[in-house]
Image (spheres, rainbow, N blue to C red):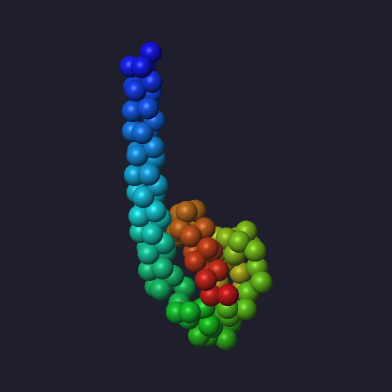
Length: 107
């Protein structure tokens, strides 16, 4: 009986260590992804919306004043609107959502 308890405790300790390692790896992966999204914003979006979301051209909305929901931003990035071209055939869905989340930091 004592042996079984020791084995079960060992399994619990081992599994909790693996979960912490996975969480750390997920955080690193998320940080790397958001760094890539920042880079994409810099070369695809900042041309019109500015480095910090303040419009550079007249037809581009000022992102610091945007009241859109995440879903609305995703739709506009994906399908375009007025002078903004659609990005659905250029960027994958994960990057489009990442850009929509990245834009929230300008508020």
